[in-house]
Length: 131
Length: 131
DNA sequence: TTCTAATTGCAAGCTGTTTGCAAGTGGTTG
DNA sequence: CAACCACTTGCAAACAGCTTGCAATTAGAA
Image (cartoon, rainbow over the protein chains, first blue to last red):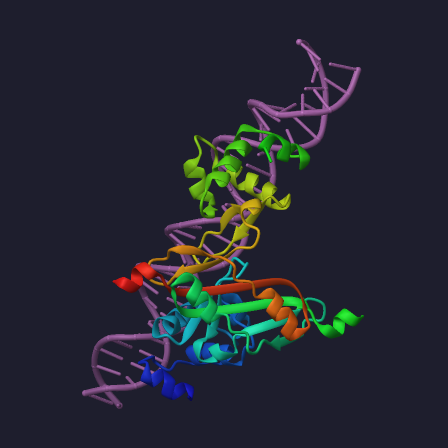
């Protein structure tokens, strides 16, 4: 869906700042922290990035993730299906993790109804292993 | 292992403050934040709790967890051989995810040698599901 | 084009973590 | 078992990241 349509559907005013934040997230291959987003922006105040993100979360467009890092990270929910990554700790290469279906297992074991999840793996890729 | 032995083995001075922090963690059934630990203490300055924890982490005795509230939480690593958690999106309750071993599967599928990973599951807990 | 409610940038405030320092203490040594 | 010293403590102040109030600006409806 195009951003204009998406914003309109969600009753979000289409400002330059919000467009830019949205586009940065849509191009990102990984979730980004607030300051990572701001660094990608041409010239937007931190508080505006912050408020854009809060608006997007509230409208259900963006998801907030917590990893072993003090700063939460953000991604577009619409990219959710591509949200399993594996990253090489040597060369930085990022691959997608396909067909790793753990949700059913987690569901069964915990009796929770899973509404969201994120998995990220760090390892040494086959190429670097050979070196 | 008894705390005196453990501290000695790790070359940590055995002070009243550290003993107390350690004992609070060893009794805890969930990871605790710094101020939760301090509240359990008889009368220890916040910075001493903080520094005890940092020492324990550095010695590999304690693990730091991020669960999406602002405050990281801490648990004894020995209680904790490979824990994953699941968090309720309604009430914030945190449960442990037992016996979810995905590493072997990821290893097999990707040929990466996994060195670290994050998994985050958000769902609605059984109690909230009933409401 | 005009009008208004929503959004922006800025600066200040808040919450939680980290650090510098003087005073105090564990534990090693003679 | 006394003396010593490097490590630890409590306190207060600094820091980092997030949040908010406000006056000026702007999107978009009328």
